[in-house]
Image (cartoon, rainbow, N blue to C red; front, side, top):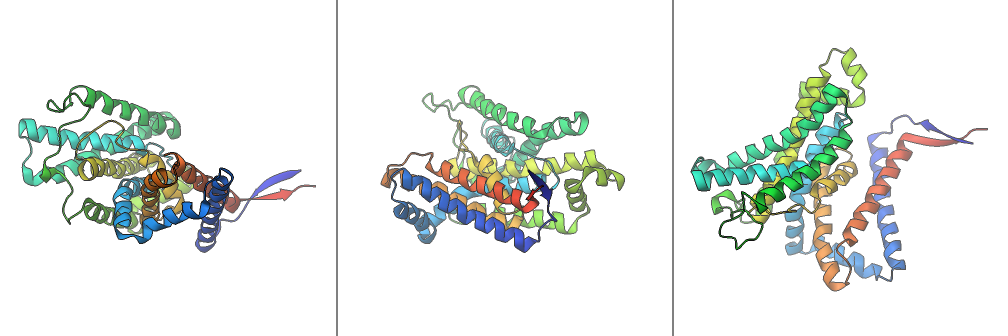
Length: 351
């Protein structure tokens, strides 16, 4: 008969080593899967590796990684306080809606000056994403509703809300009937630095630094960390658990909302249906792979952005379906979950 015993929490070095080995295991398992499917595994991995050594492709990888990185940084805040936010995808969509709304207010009503457009769009996206996350946080704080279910359902509401807007009141009157918003003016796009990825990585590094400072040096970060370890301990210490949950959720969803701001302002230049191909879900894998370390989020996010870039080449060169990269990401996620399990528990033979 077997039973599970909880281990003493491993050191950071041990944890990092186990995650690295699980990452290598994911490469091996994925290669094995595609080998039995008749795919040339050497060519498969050479195409992926080429993304990270070719300057043009690497720039594209960074470009596509920014929404993932920002969403992951938001999830770091939520996961560290024990709030399992699975709604980064919906918060990205609300960030897109808010940024587009600011553009519409400016173009049709001249409500916002040109010099403040990008700042207003960023603030609106942060507040919209944070407010969307606050719905689930309020339900948990007041009624004890499980946040996994509510944040997940809110994703679909957000996506369908975007569909309503671009098929209805926000459809471009000069867009030939296509479900698109009006195009953003040049001054409402993240083009400084010569390429949107420059602006995106600058914002990402700044947000990573703020998240690091939040948990390292601030009272709020300490309260959130204690809350993530044990809500009972936090209550016993006199901490306001409900207030901390709401504030941490606002920050978490707000950072994910900035990912939506980047999608419409840096990547697309307008709002359209299904603008995110699952950035918020990929962010969950990145946050776990980085062990909730805001600085490790940056390289991990770029790696997954490189996978998305490599996916296009895999479709054209090896005739593989678009879901190939999703399979790879899923295997990585499963290996990380297994690694976390065996780091926390050991299987003991009970006589």
